[in-house]
Every structure is written in structure tokens, then in C-alpha cells.
Image (cartoon, each protein chain N blue to C red):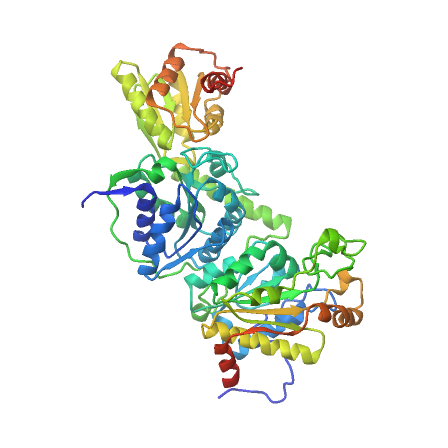
Length: 259
Length: 375
């Protein structure tokens, strides 16, 4: 019997430590962290999970989650997660990576891990810039978007085009669950949570590599209020990075029906 | 137990299995590839983890992850691949994790070639990656010694929570010699208390990182690491001395160069010349004490390497002008013949005896002559 206090409407996830946030006001990292903690709690996997933190704003992710964590070198989280998962195959492994970490520095590691069909889950935070180093251009920066290293706006002629990571990864046979969600409002946050649950379930059932891209805000480096940042995400990011399912293997469709 | 005729790379791979290797991550590169190939077949056969990584960068970071579980893990590569691994080696060192790296050194720099070399001495002994850390570096001179040092590499890595490197060269990797392999040891199933993966049993979570964002914390960590290295220096030096008891002159060489030098030293002894050989087995920690003692009584030193004199700098610092030092090295995958070293021994005894001499300058002049580039 679950001991549920019906008077509690919401509470801090038990998978969290009591660390005070270091993220900026309006940043959606906290939301993403919370969704992961809630999902692992609901799955009963809190004590069986090992997280791999990236280099970037979420370098200190392990301060918030109250379970095993390791800290990877920039971009190498999928390789590190591979090493742990292959050694301890019964553990739930996830990496939490930003766009600079995953789509620039770590493109080799993420593609290879997906192609191998590693039984790990990757949570990819796309906020179109390098947050921790002060808002430089990322592989995900939109054409024309001003950052501290594209001060005149990203010029695609000289600075190239954004990478649509989920679409790219979905082309690999080893990747069985690849979706993009957005943290722009309550409805989308609920959809993101459902996707994370499916992604971890895919891993638990040994169905392959799962990948959830989360469109996220960075009000500080975008130079916007949190509300304005959320609107900017909806207006500019969603058209460039459509919310959707890019790969759901047939085995996972069965799983979704069952659940 | 029967001797088996085995190639160095395969012997190290099979030994690693027998001493309880749980996971291996690697990438093909000559002259190391047979090590990876052997484990590609054997690890799955034994239900253990093997991944051919996307790159050496991937491989070392898989080792980094696996090392976080406290299980025996290893990678192997050759010089350019090890250069690519240096990022991960620094992180593993900075997280105090045990791991074993085999470097089957080839000629460089750059793509270089696939011939035997010792040009990675500096890379392995004096760093390579960023920040303050040391590796334990073991330099075998035969396939049997490579086998014997493989078990030791894991033991030392675990004892001190450090990275151990087996520093071979293309000769040792490719050469077949009769060896006695160790018996199969059971895989250790108990993880150390610092490892990840035990929260469901212990209720205690593990966080493994190499980050110390507050400079005082990083300094405290580094002091702790350097203190541990002092312990390694005090307890783990290994070397082999040949004819040193009455030696008036001393040749210093490790690995294949040390083994070839032994032939030359024996030839000199047959002629009644009182020369001995110091062959460091741990090139890191370096056998400084024994060399320091020898410097008090030896009339001259000859350093022999298959590189431009990388260990030479360490010998120079220890001998500290108490005796003249000579150097003989071949580079770029060239291997010295014993008679070349015999000439160098002769030069040590009868040539320039100035303690202030620059051994590298005279050697380089000799090399220009030898390879014909002119002065």
C-alpha cells in the first residue's frame, strides 16, 4: 500500500537534495531536473540510477539529484555512460547535456552511442547558446541570432547553419526513441515529462537508445525577462526545432499502448 | 606450467583477462591492434564488456565511466591514439580512479610510422594531459616481463587510485616470445566503497567528479595527490641492475633499448671493462635513489633510448654533474644495434670526460653525420 497524503498538492521530489538552485531566474534547467527526478521516483528507480553530468550550466547537476552521479569531460558523457552501463548493465544510466556539450564538442560521442544502440537515455537541453561561458554561439543558435560570439547575428555564410539534433539522431538504427519537447508552458512540460518517462522505460526494457531534446530558455544570456524568453522560444525556436516524435520503434509503440 | 609462444600484444591482453579484467574499450591502431583483437574475441566469450569505441577519445572516456564502478578496466593504444586520450587520462587522474593504459609506442611525431619507438617517455612520465598528476609507468623489456607487469599495473592502480601505464614499443607488442601466463584469478565482485552503483544496497550515494570549483579545495586535493605520489615514490620503485656492484661506468636504458644495451654491456664485460646496466622498470616513479648512489662512484654514464633523450633529462638532473654523461639514441622508429651501443660505451670511457658536457649536442652532431643531413 502506498502511503499517500491526500492533502499534499505538490512537493519537492524525493530524488532531490535540498540544494538551493544556482540557475538563473526563468531558466528551465530546474524544470528539466524536476521532471527527471519525478519520473525516476515514479518508476522506483531512484536508487538504481546513475546520472552523467556535462560541462556547461548543468555541470553541477549532481548537487540537485540525490543519487549516484559522475561528471564527464565536455561532450564525452555518452562515452562515459557507455563505460558504466556496459560494466553495470542493470543500472539506469542517463546523460544530461546542453547543446554546446552534445551537439558541438560531443557530436562524435553522441552519434556513436546512438548508432551502437547503447541502452542509455540522453536528455538534451537546447537553449541555442553556451550558457555557462556567457552566451556564445552554439551549433543550435538560430540564423541571425545575436550571441557574444556572433555579435552581428549568426551569419550562415560564415558561421554555418543550426543542427537539428533530434532529426539527425533519428536517422540511426540504434536510436529507437527520439523526440523533441518544449519547456515553454504547463501543457508542454507535461508532454516532456511523459516523453522522459517513455525514454527511461525504453531503457529499462532494453529497447535501445532513447533521446529527449528539450527546448529550453536562457533569459540571462538572451537578455530577456523570463516571460519574454518563453515567448521568444515559442515564436522563434519552435518553428526552427519542431516539437514532435522523430523515431518511435515498433516495440516502443507496443510499450506505449500497454502503458 | 608450460611455456607458450605468444606475441607481446596478445600476451598482455590474455594476462589482463586472467587477472580479472571486467571491461575493455579500445580503438584499432598499429602496432597495438592484436591486443584489441584478442579481447574482442575473449571478453564476450567470458561474458565481460568489450567495446570498439568510435575513437581513442571515446575509448578513454568509456574507461573513465567503467573505472567509476571500481571494476578492473583497461584500454590500449599507440602513440597518436594515446595523445588523443590525454584529456581523459587527466580527468581519470583528477577523479582518483584506477585504470590501466597500454601504450605500444611507435615512431613520431605526427602520424610518424608504425615502427618501435620510446618517444612517448615524456608524454607518459611527465604528463601529457593538463594539470598536476602523475601516472605509474611500467616499462617491460620482454614479453614475459610485460605479462608480469600487467597484473602489477592493476594492483598498483587500485592501491593508489591512479592510472597505471604499461609502456611498451612496437617490438615488444609484435615480438613472439615463450612466456608463462598467470592462472585465471576470479573476478573481484566487491566494489570499493567510493564506487557508483551501490546506493540500493548502502543507501549512500556516490558522486565522482574531477571538479573543485573553489581554488582552495583544488589546492587541498592537489596536495593530497602529490602526497600520495610521494608514497608511490617511496614504495614502488622497481629496476633491474646488471653488473652494477663493481661497475666504474653505468649504462642507463629501459625497455627494448635497455635490453639491447645489455648485450653491449655483456660484450664489454667479456673484454674486462667494468661497465654495468641500470634498467628502470618503473620509469615513473623513477629509480632516482639508486642512480643517485651510482653517481657518487661512477666515472661516467651512458643513457640509451629510442628517442631524442627524454629520460636523459631525468638522468642529467639526478647525476647533477658528478660524472660526465653520454647519450646514444635512435629516433623515428629506428632501433639501435648492440654494436652501435658498444661504440657509445667506448666513447663514454675514452671520449670527452668533461662533467659539463652537453650529451645531446655531441650525439646530435653524430646523428647528422650518420643520417647524412650534413652539419
